[in-house]
Length: 243
Image (tube, rainbow, N blue to C red; front, side, top):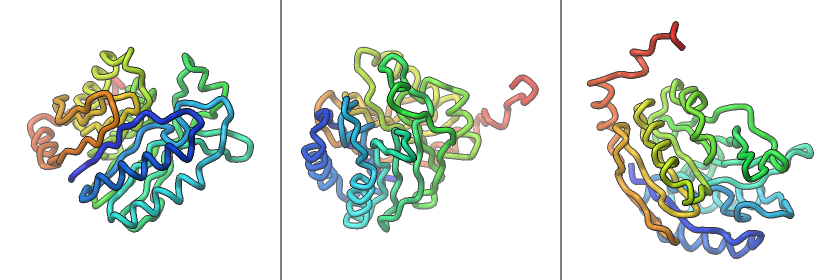
């Protein structure tokens, strides 16, 4: 499976400019199976004046997926529902159809996210090209019990759109490696601030981006995951009593 991570730092509040940047980068990632965008790429992270761009985002990524015949993990966008504001990821298949949505469950108190956003209350899993996948957004990766809950559904790949400050790069990379190792999954981390990466189930970096605007591509071999699990099946060896 060929995955393309779209990395760029959106300008806060410059919605039209951010969409144009995303369009240009997506067009440069043709011949991929899956595209992933970063967290809140539509508005930047995050504007003081909250604008609901969910419909515009959905229309944009659905059209891009159908045009280019690839799946899109739509990063995340601001969505307003019944007076509540969510940080929402939209997942679209090759036919341009929405197959899943996910609202960020863990809100980053350091950035006062809880004063703006409402936390999601469900996990999201879906199949793309016959492969079961899940999604988490940025800060979610710090919560192992949450990622384990997703992993227990049988996912092979976890997609993580993020807007993670490079000031906290070292703990972040430890976290992505740990989540990959303990759940024996691929972790695909697309970060607006840079240093996006794909981690294999052994915690090894398959590829890593630089700091600036970039399209990072890599092929992942799902047979490798099967071999890892064949040799040591961590989830099967769990002691439920201890949990």
